[in-house]
Length: 175
Image 1 (tube, one colour):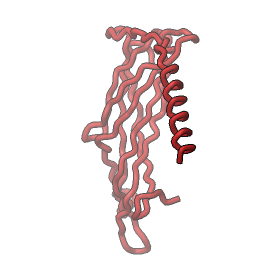
Image 2 (cartoon, rainbow, N blue to C red):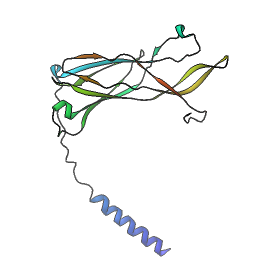
Image 3 (cartoon, one colour):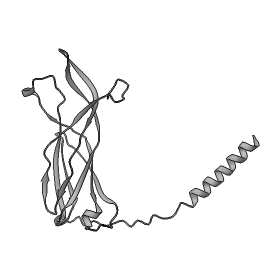
Image 4 (spheres, rainbow, N blue to C red):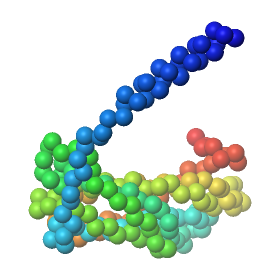
């Protein structure tokens, strides 16, 4: 028992010394981004789903997917036109009840590349199984394409249709 206690004491001492030596300040300096109107660009889009596949193709309706969180990111390299710049500017927007979103991003005269990362949303989808209609639980996923925008430019992304992945009854993915 003494050996275990001694080992544990030595381990804790080594761990505490290791953690205190890592407490140096972060050398990164926050960058200030110019957010005046003449240095910003606006991007908007719509996220749509088709939650009922039981209807005839011509009768199917798309609806907007609300409450999807979208992380919007622009690299400092693009904003400042400096290959040495590290990090990125980012913000989060949420789709409205119609699946629409709009965001203003910092840009410049030559343009910046804007990346989007949308949250997954749990939901349901109806489809035919044989002659019967059945509702499946699953996850809606959205892949929003990146865009390049210049300062004072407005870009509308064509609608993005969500893909649906079924979940098993225990909540795990169906492959």
